[in-house]
Length: 343
Image 1 (cartoon, helix red, strand yellow):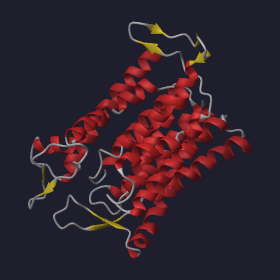
Image 2 (image 1 turned 45 degrees about the vertical axis):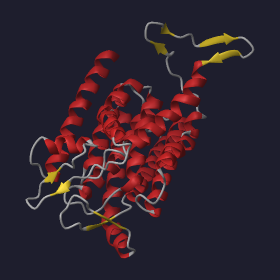
Image 3 (image 1 turned 90 degrees about the vertical axis):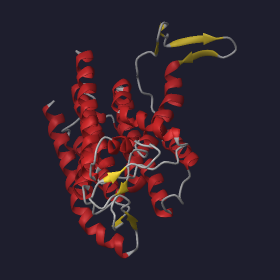
Image 4 (image 1 turned 45 degrees about the horizontal axis):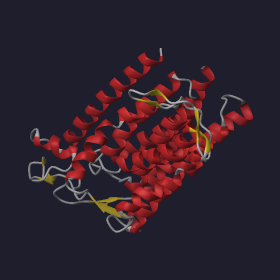
């Protein structure tokens, strides 16, 4: 346990410092090349550097490779490299999909149906790995047998169903979910950081080493990015950040066998899905900036951000803090239930 904690701390710090140092050097270069986005929640509509997700990818890659180095050459931590690299590959592929979308341009890049389709291919590394999960449980029917025999088909293992069906659904679902509730300074990075913190704690509690390392490698980079993305934002993460964060959450949940906790932690995103569906996914999370610095919700409520804006006269930072407090409550509740059920 001590080796796991020490290695986790090294991974977290390396990810944090790499991203933290890289972003200030990245911002002027992105602006110089015209890679900027408009801050829609400001009355002056300032232009902010885009593609900040690149820094998170670098921090995540470096820290994960460092964890493998600690495992291989020092034996400081015992890792199943097959599982670790499968999760690492899936997250990296999804991040690449987000980067392509960011480069092509907002609303001009990958279409909505493509956002849902492409992460299915990114799930292939995790689909190829045999992950031992408990037997599937169906309400009123109980636990299904691990293997059943069907006429003409022979023996069918539900582990195959999990890998070939549920894993890709989880990856694409989480990736697109974290891409929906976004658009305010510090919102997406803050929400994902809270979820990653909870999953890191749960992974440590469950002694799921690979999930623990992935969670801390991601968390370090997200927290470092949040420092520069907080109000007023100096850089945006784009789809690279949101898709990568969602894929990371799903990958951690899958390799640590924490599906119930993972689904619970995504509660705000499920609410966001319902609100977005009411507008046929045409609504944005932005508010209408006012002269007094507050944000007014549009006539049609299409996001949780709009719901918060309707509760009072809040500025952008206050809206984000309220949503983060809501997510914090979900995380504390979810971890409490998880820890009690694991005792």
